[in-house]
Length: 354
Figure 1 (cartoon, one colour):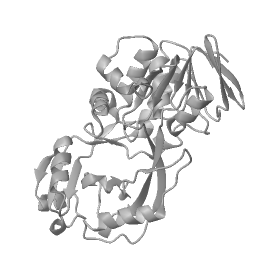
Figure 2 (cartoon, one colour):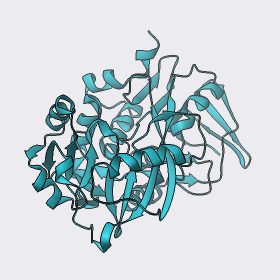
Figure 3 (cartoon, helix red, strand yellow):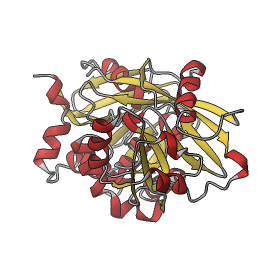
Figure 4 (cartoon, one colour):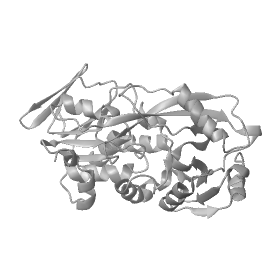
């Protein structure tokens, strides 16, 4: 089967790119799992915090605000510090554009907190929940409406380069296109290797999460997402309960991730150290992967060894909040439309080949 553009990966990156490109070219997307967004994209913290991440990510996230607006619900962000974290707290509250508040005020916003254990706190209202499922389905619907074909259950077992075309081999047949977009998330380096190109050093990092009951039967619906300084833990309301994470980022290999029980226990202990309540049971736990380039900045753009191999990977934990602007940038690159040169330079894969 032939198309103008072949996308490997059916997470938020691949599906958003398909939606941006489908009105202008024929697009085929190949996803190895039986459904879209099976791995990292389905396990996101689902928060839009536009000042979270390195400078290029912040630029993309701010540029995504308008497109994300229909999928956002106000949440707010609360940062709390313990003894000895004054310098880190000042830097983080400034970076996140938060206003300093008292420990008592912090405990009214997030009632499980113990104000006696808080040395500093800051709050902002600009953070929002993202309806990630609706956003992904909106992109998929748009892509299909413009003629794109999204194939699930199609793992790419080989890639062949011939003049003017890439061929992706799957158990269900071969797919060819002049342009290939590598949106394979944790498997992006493996896809490059199969294409005969050098990997970039992208590394998946595991993140563990637990869903716990809200303490004392409280209703957490209006509580802000709450972070410990240095992102040593976070807690986020979720359908009448709380998601608590140690915010771990342990390097690993591409796989269907699960929570590390010991790391999860340590993170829950850090959460308990700032609250009035003990965690007595888990409703569920799971793990996800966040993939980073060596410098922590995403990798978008053509491979210097083959301009028809486009990287769209390494989004770390920023994929959903930057998706609209990131997909436009990649689409503009593929369609050879003007792009912000400074942003493109910051994201180029060529920075690892110099």
